[in-house]
Image (cartoon, rainbow, N blue to C red; front, side):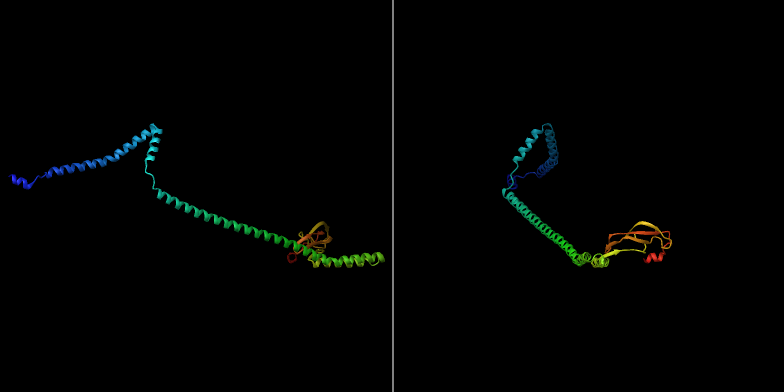
Amino acid sequence: MANDKEDKGFQIPIEDTNEEAAETTANAEEAVKAEPVAEEAAEAAEAEKAEADPEAAAEADAEAADELPADDPDIVAEAEAVLEEADIDTLEEAQAKAKEWQDRYLRLHAEWDTYRRRMQEQRADEKVRAAEKVMETLLPVLDDFERTVAYAEENGETGLLDGVKAVQSKFVDALTKSGLQIIDPVGEPYDALEAQAVQVVPDTEAFEETVKDVLQKGYKMGKKVLRAAMVTVTAGGPKRPKEESEEE
């Protein structure tokens, strides 16, 4: 009997081992389930403590922050280098674009000033040249006036009227060659755009609103009226036919 016991050795009962393992597992599960409850209770206690004494809570947070492990200096240095390089590239690019647009603005502004100054000089030159042409056309008229006056002084008034008429005709020709148009609408329908009626004259034979007399001639250049003619207009006559009015 003794030998049989020695061969078999000391054996732990299997039932006891299983019971202990089950008990350990149950205790572990209860501990895991109790952890969230314990954490919530701790957080609630800390919140109540912070509300009761804010200064003490702030000091505790500061101490906890000091106790946190410091960041790796190599990682921090590398991150700062990357950020600095990115900021430098972005800043240099923005400065380059700003300088480019500033150069464009200054160049366009200078070109506009040059163009405006050139156009002003060109308009001034055109005015001078236009005036020069008119003066060159009128110079012979001045010569004729001088000759007429000299003839009247030597020979009296005999033939003076014909000379004055010749000078007047030459003067008018010079102005018309320069683009001047004479407004002399005698016998024509009254046009308020080119004439100014200063008097209404009864006339039963002429059509209504016909220019009877021109008291002062008008002048225009192109479509612009420089001075409207001063005229008298008829009244009391028959109405002008519509077809004739439309054609005129």
